[in-house]
Image (cartoon, rainbow, N blue to C red):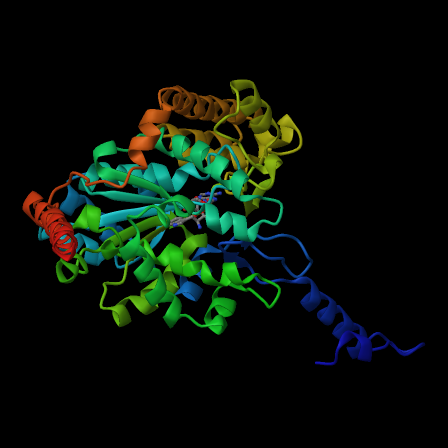
Length: 461
Ligand code: TYM
Protein backbone atom coordinates (compact mmCIF):
# COMPACT_ATOMS: atom_id res chain seq x y z
CA UNK A 1 0.00 0.00 0.00
CA UNK A 2 1.18 3.56 -0.80
CA UNK A 3 2.38 5.58 2.15
CA UNK A 4 0.34 8.57 3.40
CA UNK A 5 2.69 11.11 1.84
CA UNK A 6 2.43 9.49 -1.60
CA UNK A 7 -1.39 9.48 -1.81
CA UNK A 8 -3.18 12.69 -2.79
CA UNK A 9 -6.81 13.38 -3.76
CA UNK A 10 -7.20 14.80 -7.27
CA UNK A 11 -9.26 18.03 -7.23
CA UNK A 12 -12.68 17.44 -8.81
CA UNK A 13 -12.38 13.66 -8.76
CA UNK A 14 -14.57 11.37 -6.65
CA UNK A 15 -12.72 10.33 -3.52
CA UNK A 16 -12.20 6.83 -4.78
CA UNK A 17 -9.11 4.82 -4.06
CA UNK A 18 -6.96 7.71 -2.95
CA UNK A 19 -9.09 8.88 0.04
CA UNK A 20 -9.82 5.33 0.99
CA UNK A 21 -6.13 4.57 1.02
CA UNK A 22 -5.52 7.65 3.11
CA UNK A 23 -8.13 6.58 5.64
CA UNK A 24 -6.67 3.09 5.79
CA UNK A 25 -3.17 4.44 6.18
CA UNK A 26 -4.29 6.82 8.94
CA UNK A 27 -5.99 3.95 10.75
CA UNK A 28 -2.90 1.83 10.41
CA UNK A 29 -0.80 4.62 11.85
CA UNK A 30 -3.10 4.96 14.86
CA UNK A 31 -3.41 1.32 15.90
CA UNK A 32 -0.63 0.02 18.13
CA UNK A 33 0.19 -3.49 19.30
CA UNK A 34 0.00 -4.26 23.00
CA UNK A 35 3.30 -4.30 24.88
CA UNK A 36 4.01 -6.33 28.02
CA UNK A 37 7.54 -6.27 29.41
CA UNK A 38 8.78 -5.73 32.99
CA UNK A 39 9.19 -2.05 32.07
CA UNK A 40 6.23 -1.32 29.85
CA UNK A 41 2.66 -2.58 30.09
CA UNK A 42 -0.01 -1.30 27.71
CA UNK A 43 -2.93 -2.85 25.86
CA UNK A 44 -2.05 -0.82 22.72
CA UNK A 45 -4.40 1.30 20.59
CA UNK A 46 -7.28 0.38 18.28
CA UNK A 47 -7.66 1.69 14.71
CA UNK A 48 -9.09 4.97 16.00
CA UNK A 49 -6.24 5.47 18.45
CA UNK A 50 -8.30 4.51 21.52
CA UNK A 51 -6.52 2.56 24.31
CA UNK A 52 -7.38 -1.15 24.39
CA UNK A 53 -7.62 -3.55 27.32
CA UNK A 54 -4.77 -6.05 27.62
CA UNK A 55 -5.60 -9.17 25.62
CA UNK A 56 -4.41 -11.98 27.91
CA UNK A 57 -5.37 -14.76 25.49
CA UNK A 58 -3.15 -13.20 22.89
CA UNK A 59 -0.33 -12.88 25.44
CA UNK A 60 -0.50 -16.59 26.23
CA UNK A 61 -0.11 -17.28 22.51
CA UNK A 62 2.72 -14.81 21.89
CA UNK A 63 4.62 -15.74 25.05
CA UNK A 64 4.02 -19.45 24.45
CA UNK A 65 2.76 -20.26 27.96
CA UNK A 66 -0.21 -22.51 28.80
CA UNK A 67 -3.66 -21.52 29.98
CA UNK A 68 -4.74 -22.81 33.38
CA UNK A 69 -7.83 -24.83 32.52
CA UNK A 70 -10.47 -26.69 34.52
CA UNK A 71 -8.59 -29.97 34.17
CA UNK A 72 -5.45 -28.52 35.75
CA UNK A 73 -7.47 -26.87 38.53
CA UNK A 74 -9.18 -30.19 39.30
CA UNK A 75 -5.80 -31.88 39.46
CA UNK A 76 -4.45 -29.11 41.70
CA UNK A 77 -7.34 -29.66 44.11
CA UNK A 78 -6.92 -33.43 44.04
CA UNK A 79 -3.17 -33.36 44.60
CA UNK A 80 -3.13 -30.67 47.30
CA UNK A 81 -6.49 -31.37 48.96
CA UNK A 82 -7.14 -27.60 48.95
CA UNK A 83 -9.81 -25.57 47.20
CA UNK A 84 -8.11 -23.44 44.51
CA UNK A 85 -7.53 -19.83 45.60
CA UNK A 86 -10.20 -17.34 44.48
CA UNK A 87 -7.75 -15.91 41.94
CA UNK A 88 -7.36 -19.37 40.39
CA UNK A 89 -11.12 -20.01 40.49
CA UNK A 90 -11.81 -16.72 38.70
CA UNK A 91 -9.10 -16.96 36.04
CA UNK A 92 -7.07 -14.07 37.52
CA UNK A 93 -4.15 -16.45 37.90
CA UNK A 94 -4.56 -17.69 34.36
CA UNK A 95 -1.41 -19.02 32.77
CA UNK A 96 1.60 -21.19 33.60
CA UNK A 97 4.68 -23.00 32.48
CA UNK A 98 5.24 -26.53 33.85
CA UNK A 99 2.87 -26.26 36.83
CA UNK A 100 1.86 -29.86 35.99
CA UNK A 101 5.49 -30.97 36.51
CA UNK A 102 5.54 -29.32 39.94
CA UNK A 103 2.35 -31.21 40.83
CA UNK A 104 3.96 -34.46 39.61
CA UNK A 105 6.95 -33.88 41.89
CA UNK A 106 4.82 -32.83 44.84
CA UNK A 107 2.74 -35.99 44.46
CA UNK A 108 5.94 -38.04 44.68
CA UNK A 109 7.05 -36.14 47.80
CA UNK A 110 9.92 -34.38 45.98
CA UNK A 111 10.43 -30.97 47.59
CA UNK A 112 10.42 -27.73 45.56
CA UNK A 113 10.74 -24.06 46.42
CA UNK A 114 8.81 -20.89 45.65
CA UNK A 115 10.47 -17.73 44.39
CA UNK A 116 8.94 -14.30 43.93
CA UNK A 117 10.11 -10.69 44.23
CA UNK A 118 9.66 -6.96 44.16
CA UNK A 119 11.60 -4.06 42.65
CA UNK A 120 11.51 -1.38 45.38
CA UNK A 121 10.60 1.74 43.41
CA UNK A 122 8.56 3.55 46.08
CA UNK A 123 8.33 3.47 49.87
CA UNK A 124 4.83 2.01 49.92
CA UNK A 125 3.62 -0.82 47.72
CA UNK A 126 0.22 -0.60 46.03
CA UNK A 127 -2.50 -3.21 46.35
CA UNK A 128 -1.64 -4.54 42.87
CA UNK A 129 1.80 -5.58 44.11
CA UNK A 130 0.21 -7.65 46.85
CA UNK A 131 -1.60 -9.85 44.29
CA UNK A 132 1.39 -12.17 43.58
CA UNK A 133 2.43 -12.03 47.25
CA UNK A 134 -1.04 -12.99 48.52
CA UNK A 135 -1.11 -15.81 46.04
CA UNK A 136 2.40 -16.90 46.99
CA UNK A 137 1.41 -17.02 50.66
CA UNK A 138 -1.49 -19.28 49.73
CA UNK A 139 0.91 -21.58 47.82
CA UNK A 140 3.34 -21.62 50.75
CA UNK A 141 0.52 -22.62 53.12
CA UNK A 142 -0.84 -25.27 50.74
CA UNK A 143 2.45 -26.91 49.79
CA UNK A 144 4.42 -26.21 52.98
CA UNK A 145 7.55 -25.27 51.02
CA UNK A 146 10.43 -22.80 51.43
CA UNK A 147 10.16 -19.40 49.78
CA UNK A 148 12.82 -17.00 48.55
CA UNK A 149 11.83 -13.35 48.00
CA UNK A 150 14.21 -11.18 46.00
CA UNK A 151 14.21 -7.39 46.37
CA UNK A 152 15.81 -6.00 43.24
CA UNK A 153 16.97 -2.63 44.54
CA UNK A 154 19.82 -2.75 42.00
CA UNK A 155 17.32 -3.16 39.12
CA UNK A 156 15.36 -0.08 40.20
CA UNK A 157 18.55 1.93 40.71
CA UNK A 158 19.87 1.12 37.23
CA UNK A 159 16.53 1.73 35.54
CA UNK A 160 15.34 4.95 37.23
CA UNK A 161 17.65 7.95 36.71
CA UNK A 162 16.20 9.97 39.61
CA UNK A 163 16.79 7.24 42.24
CA UNK A 164 20.03 7.03 44.25
CA UNK A 165 21.36 3.86 45.87
CA UNK A 166 20.38 5.37 49.21
CA UNK A 167 16.77 5.91 47.99
CA UNK A 168 16.32 2.36 46.74
CA UNK A 169 17.76 0.85 49.90
CA UNK A 170 15.35 2.94 51.99
CA UNK A 171 12.46 1.65 49.86
CA UNK A 172 13.83 -1.89 50.19
CA UNK A 173 13.56 -1.83 53.98
CA UNK A 174 10.00 -0.44 53.89
CA UNK A 175 8.91 -2.85 51.15
CA UNK A 176 10.41 -5.82 53.02
CA UNK A 177 8.26 -4.89 56.03
CA UNK A 178 5.19 -4.56 53.77
CA UNK A 179 5.87 -8.00 52.31
CA UNK A 180 6.35 -9.58 55.75
CA UNK A 181 2.96 -8.11 56.71
CA UNK A 182 1.33 -10.30 54.02
CA UNK A 183 1.84 -13.06 56.58
CA UNK A 184 4.70 -15.31 55.43
CA UNK A 185 6.04 -18.01 57.70
CA UNK A 186 9.41 -16.81 59.01
CA UNK A 187 10.78 -20.35 59.44
CA UNK A 188 10.23 -21.03 55.73
CA UNK A 189 10.99 -17.63 54.16
CA UNK A 190 14.23 -15.89 53.21
CA UNK A 191 14.01 -12.30 51.92
CA UNK A 192 17.08 -10.66 50.43
CA UNK A 193 18.03 -7.34 48.85
CA UNK A 194 20.41 -7.66 45.92
CA UNK A 195 22.79 -4.87 46.99
CA UNK A 196 23.15 -6.40 50.45
CA UNK A 197 23.17 -10.12 49.65
CA UNK A 198 25.72 -10.16 46.82
CA UNK A 199 28.38 -8.60 49.06
CA UNK A 200 27.47 -10.35 52.27
CA UNK A 201 29.65 -13.47 52.14
CA UNK A 202 26.79 -15.93 51.57
CA UNK A 203 26.44 -15.31 47.84
CA UNK A 204 29.44 -17.12 46.36
CA UNK A 205 27.25 -19.82 44.76
CA UNK A 206 24.64 -17.25 43.70
CA UNK A 207 27.31 -15.07 42.07
CA UNK A 208 28.66 -18.05 40.16
CA UNK A 209 25.20 -18.74 38.75
CA UNK A 210 24.97 -15.06 37.72
CA UNK A 211 28.32 -15.45 35.92
CA UNK A 212 27.20 -18.67 34.17
CA UNK A 213 24.01 -16.96 33.01
CA UNK A 214 25.81 -13.76 31.98
CA UNK A 215 28.23 -15.71 29.83
CA UNK A 216 25.35 -17.37 27.98
CA UNK A 217 23.28 -14.23 27.33
CA UNK A 218 23.94 -11.99 24.36
CA UNK A 219 23.16 -8.29 23.95
CA UNK A 220 20.89 -9.27 21.04
CA UNK A 221 18.83 -11.54 23.28
CA UNK A 222 18.38 -8.80 25.89
CA UNK A 223 17.40 -6.25 23.24
CA UNK A 224 14.89 -8.67 21.73
CA UNK A 225 13.37 -9.75 25.05
CA UNK A 226 13.19 -6.42 26.91
CA UNK A 227 13.01 -3.90 24.06
CA UNK A 228 16.27 -2.23 25.18
CA UNK A 229 18.35 -0.18 22.74
CA UNK A 230 21.83 1.34 22.69
CA UNK A 231 20.72 4.07 25.12
CA UNK A 232 20.07 1.64 27.95
CA UNK A 233 22.96 1.48 30.39
CA UNK A 234 25.26 -1.53 30.62
CA UNK A 235 24.03 -2.42 34.12
CA UNK A 236 20.48 -2.86 32.78
CA UNK A 237 21.82 -5.30 30.21
CA UNK A 238 23.60 -7.32 32.88
CA UNK A 239 20.79 -7.33 35.46
CA UNK A 240 18.54 -10.12 34.02
CA UNK A 241 21.17 -12.69 35.05
CA UNK A 242 20.59 -11.65 38.68
CA UNK A 243 16.83 -12.16 38.55
CA UNK A 244 17.32 -15.53 36.85
CA UNK A 245 20.00 -16.85 39.23
CA UNK A 246 17.48 -16.82 42.09
CA UNK A 247 15.46 -19.50 40.29
CA UNK A 248 18.20 -22.09 40.96
CA UNK A 249 18.33 -23.84 44.34
CA UNK A 250 22.12 -24.13 44.00
CA UNK A 251 22.30 -20.35 44.58
CA UNK A 252 21.31 -20.94 48.22
CA UNK A 253 23.48 -23.70 49.75
CA UNK A 254 22.62 -22.47 53.26
CA UNK A 255 18.97 -23.41 52.54
CA UNK A 256 19.18 -26.39 50.21
CA UNK A 257 22.50 -27.97 51.12
CA UNK A 258 25.87 -28.25 49.50
CA UNK A 259 25.64 -31.33 47.26
CA UNK A 260 25.40 -29.65 43.82
CA UNK A 261 24.07 -32.78 42.07
CA UNK A 262 21.25 -33.22 44.56
CA UNK A 263 20.42 -29.53 44.89
CA UNK A 264 20.34 -28.97 41.10
CA UNK A 265 17.29 -31.26 41.08
CA UNK A 266 15.22 -29.10 43.47
CA UNK A 267 12.58 -27.47 41.24
CA UNK A 268 11.41 -23.87 41.53
CA UNK A 269 7.93 -22.38 41.05
CA UNK A 270 7.67 -18.63 40.41
CA UNK A 271 4.38 -16.80 41.02
CA UNK A 272 4.29 -13.33 39.39
CA UNK A 273 2.16 -11.12 37.16
CA UNK A 274 2.81 -11.84 33.50
CA UNK A 275 5.06 -8.77 32.99
CA UNK A 276 7.93 -10.71 34.64
CA UNK A 277 7.72 -13.61 32.17
CA UNK A 278 10.44 -12.24 29.83
CA UNK A 279 13.05 -12.69 32.58
CA UNK A 280 12.12 -16.28 33.10
CA UNK A 281 11.84 -17.17 29.42
CA UNK A 282 15.55 -16.36 29.24
CA UNK A 283 16.21 -18.25 32.42
CA UNK A 284 14.38 -21.32 31.08
CA UNK A 285 16.42 -21.21 27.86
CA UNK A 286 19.66 -21.26 29.81
CA UNK A 287 18.78 -23.67 32.63
CA UNK A 288 19.34 -27.00 30.80
CA UNK A 289 22.65 -25.72 29.41
CA UNK A 290 23.75 -25.23 33.02
CA UNK A 291 22.53 -28.68 34.09
CA UNK A 292 19.52 -27.25 35.96
CA UNK A 293 15.76 -27.72 35.76
CA UNK A 294 13.73 -25.02 34.04
CA UNK A 295 11.81 -23.04 36.67
CA UNK A 296 8.02 -23.40 36.52
CA UNK A 297 5.97 -20.20 36.46
CA UNK A 298 2.43 -19.25 37.36
CA UNK A 299 1.14 -15.93 35.97
CA UNK A 300 -1.53 -13.54 37.21
CA UNK A 301 -3.25 -10.76 35.29
CA UNK A 302 -2.73 -7.16 36.43
CA UNK A 303 -4.92 -5.38 38.91
CA UNK A 304 -6.21 -2.58 36.68
CA UNK A 305 -5.48 1.11 37.19
CA UNK A 306 -8.16 3.21 38.90
CA UNK A 307 -8.43 4.96 35.51
CA UNK A 308 -9.53 1.82 33.64
CA UNK A 309 -8.55 -1.66 32.57
CA UNK A 310 -6.43 -0.40 29.65
CA UNK A 311 -3.45 -0.03 31.99
CA UNK A 312 -2.23 -1.66 35.18
CA UNK A 313 -2.07 -0.13 38.63
CA UNK A 314 1.41 1.36 38.73
CA UNK A 315 3.52 2.94 41.48
CA UNK A 316 4.89 5.49 39.00
CA UNK A 317 1.34 6.86 38.49
CA UNK A 318 -0.01 7.72 41.97
CA UNK A 319 -3.51 8.51 40.62
CA UNK A 320 -3.76 4.99 39.22
CA UNK A 321 -3.14 3.31 42.56
CA UNK A 322 -4.39 2.50 46.02
CA UNK A 323 -1.37 2.27 48.29
CA UNK A 324 -1.04 0.03 51.31
CA UNK A 325 -0.34 3.19 53.32
CA UNK A 326 -3.63 4.86 52.25
CA UNK A 327 -6.12 5.80 54.98
CA UNK A 328 -9.76 4.64 54.91
CA UNK A 329 -10.72 8.07 53.69
CA UNK A 330 -8.19 8.03 50.84
CA UNK A 331 -9.42 4.58 49.79
CA UNK A 332 -13.00 5.87 49.75
CA UNK A 333 -12.10 8.95 47.69
CA UNK A 334 -10.06 6.95 45.18
CA UNK A 335 -12.71 4.27 44.65
CA UNK A 336 -15.29 7.07 44.30
CA UNK A 337 -13.33 8.44 41.34
CA UNK A 338 -12.54 5.07 39.75
CA UNK A 339 -13.69 4.37 36.20
CA UNK A 340 -17.26 3.09 36.26
CA UNK A 341 -19.13 0.89 33.82
CA UNK A 342 -22.41 2.44 34.98
CA UNK A 343 -24.68 4.52 32.73
CA UNK A 344 -24.84 8.34 32.71
CA UNK A 345 -28.13 8.65 34.62
CA UNK A 346 -29.78 6.46 37.26
CA UNK A 347 -32.76 6.06 34.95
CA UNK A 348 -30.66 4.87 32.02
CA UNK A 349 -28.72 2.58 34.35
CA UNK A 350 -31.95 0.93 35.53
CA UNK A 351 -32.97 0.48 31.89
CA UNK A 352 -29.68 -0.74 30.35
CA UNK A 353 -27.69 -1.98 33.33
CA UNK A 354 -23.96 -1.62 34.13
CA UNK A 355 -20.95 -3.13 32.34
CA UNK A 356 -19.00 -5.19 34.85
CA UNK A 357 -16.29 -6.08 32.31
CA UNK A 358 -15.02 -2.48 32.26
CA UNK A 359 -16.14 -1.36 35.72
CA UNK A 360 -13.00 -0.92 37.85
CA UNK A 361 -14.70 -1.25 41.28
CA UNK A 362 -16.33 -4.50 40.12
CA UNK A 363 -13.00 -5.74 38.79
CA UNK A 364 -11.40 -4.99 42.17
CA UNK A 365 -14.10 -7.03 43.89
CA UNK A 366 -13.17 -10.03 41.75
CA UNK A 367 -9.62 -9.83 43.17
CA UNK A 368 -10.44 -9.18 46.81
CA UNK A 369 -13.91 -10.53 47.67
CA UNK A 370 -13.67 -14.11 48.93
CA UNK A 371 -17.39 -14.97 48.76
CA UNK A 372 -18.21 -16.34 45.27
CA UNK A 373 -21.97 -16.20 45.82
CA UNK A 374 -21.98 -12.59 46.95
CA UNK A 375 -19.79 -11.61 44.00
CA UNK A 376 -22.19 -13.32 41.60
CA UNK A 377 -25.17 -11.61 43.25
CA UNK A 378 -23.50 -8.20 42.79
CA UNK A 379 -22.67 -8.99 39.15
CA UNK A 380 -26.24 -9.86 38.30
CA UNK A 381 -27.79 -6.95 40.22
CA UNK A 382 -25.41 -4.50 38.57
CA UNK A 383 -25.70 -5.86 35.04
CA UNK A 384 -29.48 -5.92 35.29
CA UNK A 385 -29.56 -2.33 36.52
CA UNK A 386 -30.93 -2.97 40.02
CA UNK A 387 -27.66 -1.96 41.66
CA UNK A 388 -26.43 1.55 40.92
CA UNK A 389 -22.81 2.52 40.42
CA UNK A 390 -22.65 4.34 43.81
CA UNK A 391 -23.78 1.19 45.62
CA UNK A 392 -21.20 -0.93 43.83
CA UNK A 393 -18.49 1.60 44.68
CA UNK A 394 -19.57 1.40 48.33
CA UNK A 395 -19.25 -2.40 48.32
CA UNK A 396 -15.78 -2.09 46.75
CA UNK A 397 -14.72 0.62 49.23
CA UNK A 398 -15.77 -1.60 52.14
CA UNK A 399 -13.85 -4.57 50.80
CA UNK A 400 -10.70 -2.56 50.08
CA UNK A 401 -10.82 -0.70 53.41
CA UNK A 402 -10.94 -4.08 55.16
CA UNK A 403 -8.05 -5.40 53.02
CA UNK A 404 -5.82 -2.32 53.47
CA UNK A 405 -6.87 -1.99 57.15
CA UNK A 406 -6.01 -5.63 57.93
CA UNK A 407 -2.71 -5.10 56.23
CA UNK A 408 -2.10 -1.89 58.25
CA UNK A 409 -2.63 -3.77 61.52
CA UNK A 410 -0.27 -6.58 60.57
CA UNK A 411 2.31 -4.05 59.33
CA UNK A 412 2.36 -2.34 62.74
CA UNK A 413 3.45 -5.63 64.30
CA UNK A 414 6.48 -5.97 61.97
CA UNK A 415 9.47 -4.74 63.97
CA UNK A 416 12.98 -4.04 62.75
CA UNK A 417 14.09 -7.17 64.60
CA UNK A 418 11.59 -9.31 62.69
CA UNK A 419 12.66 -7.78 59.37
CA UNK A 420 16.33 -8.49 60.11
CA UNK A 421 15.56 -12.11 60.93
CA UNK A 422 13.63 -12.63 57.65
CA UNK A 423 16.62 -11.11 55.80
CA UNK A 424 19.33 -13.12 57.56
CA UNK A 425 20.83 -15.87 55.38
CA UNK A 426 19.99 -19.00 57.35
CA UNK A 427 18.70 -22.55 57.22
CA UNK A 428 14.94 -22.79 56.65
CA UNK A 429 12.65 -25.44 58.07
CA UNK A 430 10.64 -27.48 55.55
CA UNK A 431 9.66 -30.98 54.53
CA UNK A 432 12.62 -32.60 52.76
CA UNK A 433 15.15 -30.06 54.03
CA UNK A 434 18.76 -31.24 53.87
CA UNK A 435 19.66 -33.39 56.83
CA UNK A 436 21.32 -31.49 59.63
CA UNK A 437 24.18 -33.94 59.14
CA UNK A 438 24.87 -32.64 55.62
CA UNK A 439 24.92 -29.04 56.78
CA UNK A 440 26.98 -30.00 59.81
CA UNK A 441 29.43 -31.91 57.58
CA UNK A 442 29.79 -28.78 55.44
CA UNK A 443 30.46 -26.71 58.53
CA UNK A 444 32.93 -29.31 59.91
CA UNK A 445 34.76 -29.43 56.59
CA UNK A 446 35.17 -25.67 56.76
CA UNK A 447 36.43 -25.88 60.37
CA UNK A 448 38.88 -28.65 59.44
CA UNK A 449 40.24 -26.60 56.56
CA UNK A 450 40.73 -23.65 58.86
CA UNK A 451 42.43 -25.87 61.46
CA UNK A 452 44.70 -27.37 58.79
CA UNK A 453 45.65 -23.91 57.60
CA UNK A 454 46.30 -22.84 61.17
CA UNK A 455 48.47 -25.95 61.68
CA UNK A 456 50.46 -25.19 58.54
CA UNK A 457 51.00 -21.64 59.71
CA UNK A 458 52.14 -22.85 63.14
CA UNK A 459 54.56 -25.35 61.54
CA UNK A 460 55.96 -22.67 59.29
CA UNK A 461 56.99 -20.60 62.33
P1 TYM B 1 7.63 -5.20 40.66
O1 TYM B 1 8.10 -4.51 41.88
O2 TYM B 1 7.42 -4.39 39.43
O3 TYM B 1 6.33 -5.97 40.98
C1 TYM B 1 6.24 -6.87 42.08
C2 TYM B 1 5.27 -7.98 41.72
O4 TYM B 1 3.98 -7.42 41.49
C3 TYM B 1 3.52 -7.74 40.18
N1 TYM B 1 2.73 -6.58 39.75
C4 TYM B 1 1.39 -6.62 39.70
N2 TYM B 1 0.53 -7.62 39.93
C5 TYM B 1 -0.78 -7.37 39.78
N3 TYM B 1 -1.26 -6.15 39.40
C6 TYM B 1 -0.43 -5.11 39.17
N4 TYM B 1 -0.92 -3.94 38.81
C7 TYM B 1 0.98 -5.32 39.32
N5 TYM B 1 2.09 -4.55 39.16
C8 TYM B 1 3.14 -5.34 39.44
C9 TYM B 1 4.78 -8.04 39.37
O5 TYM B 1 4.52 -8.89 38.29
C10 TYM B 1 5.63 -8.71 40.43
O6 TYM B 1 5.27 -10.07 40.55
N6 TYM B 1 11.79 -7.33 38.71
C11 TYM B 1 10.69 -7.51 39.66
C12 TYM B 1 11.15 -8.05 41.01
C13 TYM B 1 11.40 -9.53 40.98
C14 TYM B 1 10.41 -10.56 40.82
C15 TYM B 1 11.10 -11.79 40.85
C16 TYM B 1 9.02 -10.50 40.66
C17 TYM B 1 12.60 -10.18 41.12
N7 TYM B 1 12.43 -11.52 41.03
C18 TYM B 1 10.42 -13.02 40.73
C19 TYM B 1 8.34 -11.72 40.54
C20 TYM B 1 9.03 -12.95 40.57
C21 TYM B 1 9.92 -6.21 39.85
O7 TYM B 1 10.44 -5.13 39.64
O8 TYM B 1 8.63 -6.40 40.33
